[in-house]
Length: 553
Image (cartoon, rainbow, N blue to C red; front, side, top):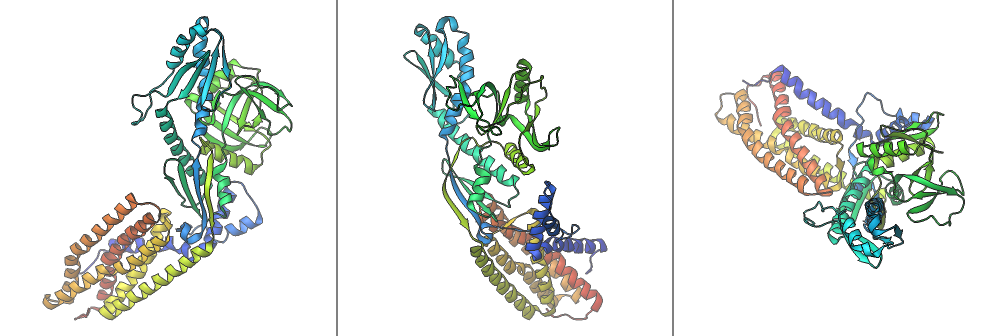
C-alpha cells in the first residue's frame, strides 16, 4: 500500500530542515564570515566596539559554518619553500658534544685532556692531549653510534668517526644524512601545517614537492608576506646554563659557549653554553597566561623526558642563573631559587597580550627544524577568483534551469515534484559542505554542476518505471509503489559505482581533484536521498490529498 509511517515522514523533513539550516549562512557569506572572525578575536581577549558590532551581525542561535572557498575562487597566497636540510647537521653536532665529552672523560688516563675545536658546521673536531690514545678515543666515540631507524639505512650507523692527527673528527654518515633530510622535511611540513591551522586559516593546501620542497597555498590570506610571517618564524626555544653576562658582543665566548643578546635589556649580552639542557622539542603545551603581577606571560609544560632533565638541573644548580633563549635571544635569565619538579614553568618578559598569544601558538606548534628558503611567492587577487565564481554561477544556473524545464515538460506534475527535490538537493549539498568544513574549488563547482544533471537520473528511472506499471497495474497507487520498488536496484547500482569512483579520486588525488571528489560524493548521497525519500513523500502527500483515479506521468 502506498504509505509512509508518520515517524519516517518526520525524520525525512527533519533531515531536510537541518540541511537547509546549515546551508543558510552561505547565502549571507560576507556577513557571517565577518561575524565569525569577530567572535574568534573576542574569544582570545581582543575587545573593541567594532568587534562587538561585527559579532552581532549574525545571531548566535543560527548555524554559522561556511563552505570554505579555495584559492582559485577566493584568492590568497602561494608559496614554494625549500627546506635548508643542511642546518640540521650543525644542530646534531652541537647537541652531540656533551655526550662525546662525557664519554671521553672516563678515558682521561688514556686520552688526556679534551677540547672542542672550531670546525665546519657539519662536523665536530675534538682535540686530545695524548695522541697515543687516539685509537682508544676513536673506539669510545664510535661506541656512541646508533643504528639508523629507516628502511634505506638498515644496518648502518648514524655517525662516522676518524682520526686526523691529534683530533677526532665526527660526521654524520651518508645514510644518516639521507634519513635526516627526509625527517627534516616531514617535520617542517607538519609544523608549517600546525602553524597555519593554529591561526585559523581555512583549508590550506600544504604538500611536499620533490625531495626538499614544500608547496603552501592558503585561501583568503592577505598577501604572501603575511603568510611568510606566520610560517617563517623559527620560534626555537631552549634552556641554557649561563656562563657570564656583559656588554661586549665581541668578547671571546670560550669553547663550547656562545654569546647571545638580551631581548629586554638593550646592550646586554649573555654567554651561555651552546648545548641546551632542555629544548622546545620536549614541550607538550604552551598557553598564554599572566604572571603574579598580572603581566602577560606564557606558561609551558615539558614531556616526561624534558621534565626529568629540567628538574634534575634545577635541583643541582640552585642559586645559578638559567637562560631561556628564543631564536638566539635571551628573553629571560632568572636565578634558580629552588628545585622545580613536574616540568612546568612560566616565561615572563615585556609581552603584550597579543605577543604572548602568538608566542604560545609558535611554541605549541613547535620549532622549525631548519630554515625555509622561499623560492616562489605569489599573492593571488580575488578578482581572478570572482571571475571563476561568476562563470561557475552561470554554468550552474544554466544547467539547473535546463533540467527544471526538461523535467516539467517531460513528466508534468511529477516533474515539478522532482524539481522541488532538486532544489532541496542543492541546499543539502551546501549544508553538508558547511557541516564538514569542506573547501569549494572551481573543480568542486564542476562537481555540483554534474550533480545537478545526475540528480534527476533516479527520478527519470522511477517515473519511467511508473509509466510501464500503469499499463499493467490495477491502479495508480500500485503503479507508483511498484515504480519505486523496481527502480531501486538500478538507482543503487548506478550511484554506488559513481560513489566508489569519487572515493578513489579523493583517496588518490590532491587539491582540486579532491574538491571535485567531495562535491561529487556528497551530491550522490543527497541525490539518492531526495529521489528515493523526498519525491516519494511529496507524491504520497499529494496522492492522499487528491485521491486521483488516474495519473499521467
